[in-house]
Length: 378
Image (cartoon, rainbow, N blue to C red; front, side, top):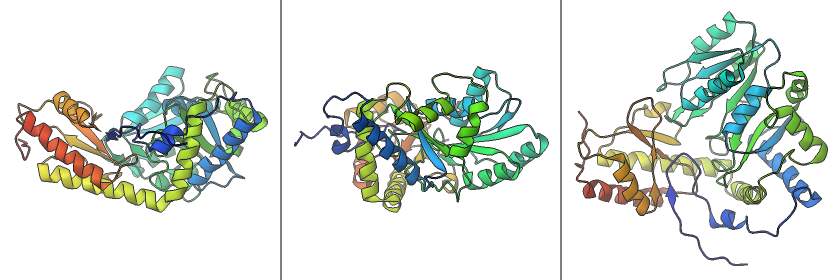
């Protein structure tokens, strides 16, 4: 069936991302009870695809699906994977790794919140010092890509360190999964996590943890700190019954099935190449207008750029945002402490022509608000 084309907005925020119409319309399906065998088969195939996207061996790794935003994964992994009497080391260099520390505090878990500068990758020397100093650490947790700043962390090296000291490694890959190539074995990873609305460019409501089944089985004996987000409980229910324990986001799963088909159609290398050329086009446009970014390019993920507000009395982020929004483009505030920034992201089904059109609109927004071009900094 042919459907009318949906108005296309270019989302330059860090997710949800711009989607294809085919993904949108994949949600238009006959009503079905998610306990039917037909739906269970869809779930099974999807779980296997989610593992394959990060080159996981299906005999060693599995996908555990949850209904919720990406934070449900943080809650699930942290609350479920720390043995009794052990600690978790949070390598914290931004808002999203910091959220891991907040989860630990909420549950009253014994943890080390090792803070690093938010504008630099995690320092491996200091991370190893922390591991050497405390033999009670059983889990190391970090973000692959700190979406608040655009800093990319060296997860392969962090994973190797964790394993050197007998720890498991849990990495928040919410904003890199299905974008930056990830290999569970080569990158020394035990658990990763993501949500459908980011790298897969599907809809919100479906999140998933991919991890080692041997560790999941062992976690049955760990303290139960949560009911809804207990990782072992969800894993065992899916394994035994082929269903999520609680109601799944049915339409989002249909959309994600289509998004995965489109991912395989483009391929890992082709998709990552597109994200990189969009990132390059964003830098080119920013430089032409005189904008400065706060993270050195060699430390950036090539997915998010943190742009410093110009020092112009007429600069007003809300007014610029609203002008662009009315033109079909979305920009997003930064998350760099109190430093006034906004973010431009190369996520979603966008390409260089979209970025060129965006900068035409941004120039008009600056002109409409009487902001000097090129923009000025003190």
